[in-house]
Length: 415
Image (tube, rainbow, N blue to C red; front, top):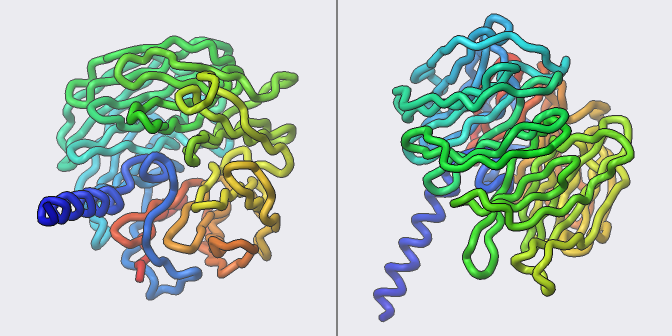
């Protein structure tokens, strides 16, 4: 019996280790932004494992599986879309694949490649969208094109920036559009076949990446955020709506850009408008509430983020606002632990914070990488000024730190 338990423990540990080695979507495993590694709080030239110049445009974040780093990019003002695979150990380009696309209107801070690839053990999945096309592609890790599926056009003048996720054998593609329309999709990872499609009356183009909530009964649900619809839960296998709860403000138009995260028996989501209200709302899903209905547990609306996603670490929730003000609260209640502004970096933040071991990193829009302690009080540990635009979120994998700037893809050595 003891031998059996040892085997089970070793298998579990191996599976956990394998999962933590990879960063398979925007903000890593289920969007939690965490990896157990140690990264220097500030860098010098000898801190880099490698630095790869990028001639192509894109703000999408890197994803990592094993010894491969994947990013989306574009050239010719969006008329060519590209997928780039880089060796995680030495920064050499293993392969690129290019496909024709179309120029379209974007927000001045957006790009034609702002989506983050999703990965599984075999494939890399990328999506691009414009007025007449929403193209989803799957390549294996060696660069062979397996399939392409066109889900139709995307309405919205700010341009496309949605990232897919993988759930078991299906690729989940969110597609809330402007002024109604759009749909959420599940595609077969092997074939690209549409397994289900859920029409949406969203009213606003949405950029948030969904997360997966799994209750004590072991059943999982896909959680999406949207300004008009609020939180939506879908059954992953069928697309059936399990519940929906509208909780965000409706007096004026807002947009969900920040991605939801799971915090115990709660799901946390953000919505707002750049110069107006911003809301952080904690929801208890119907599957774990006492009355069998989804319910709002708490909310915060003072100096909340609009673009950066929340970050959870045990009993601390970090809310890194776009202007550099960080609010640390208790995830169960929203009770404030501390609130402080980043020192010496007067800038805006388009990327989301990540947690490497006991250190939190967030990168300003102009390339200042800020490190703070995961702590009961505010402790700024260091700032590294890269001197170039950065509108993406770091990836943590293989014990290292990967970051895509406007000019480079870099790898910082972990200890």
